[in-house]
Image (tube, rainbow, N blue to C red; front, side, top):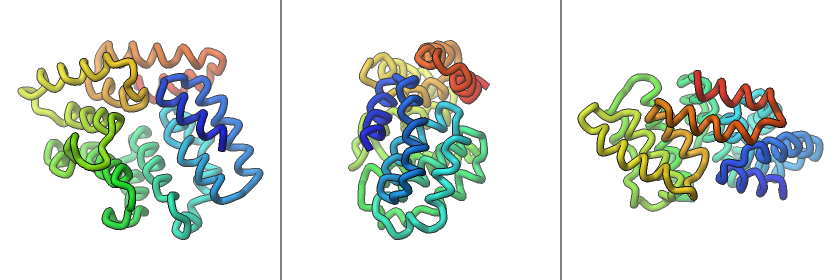
Length: 229
């Protein structure tokens, strides 16, 4: 569980070599322990970072251990399906993302406002991935909605940039560049925003983050492949 805290902290800060170091150890340790709440804690912390690093195959044993109905009985576990949906979208599989989102409880039954907002954002991202265009934005939470934090505002801005008509792009891009200049920006959300903008900014940010993975060349390569293909 200490490793989970380190994963979350280093992920936000963009120190992804340390994310990988803790996540790779935590996966083996928690599967050996096989204690459900510990498995959920590690999964909540590590699954999205592993997908972002292009290391989703390493996460599959933990996902499979949790996917047999265990999470239906324990509180706090359904957020794991959000990470699985995000992983599917990063792999270009919008149908798989829809499958994972369908495993969630109805929105009204999710207690945390932040989780409800994250569900809505992922639904929009999945809709955009299947070509539904700007119409998908109709369910996007407003920036001041209950549960929206700085990370989710960046992710929502990324979706608006990805779906915007050409006439709307200059204002959105100016807002995005201002947000990306903040050194406190959530590294994962900032990367999503850079991808929505495309161009040199994405290559630069990926290069900066990849430097922290120099000690793990295979992970460095899978991270680059996930974001620059």
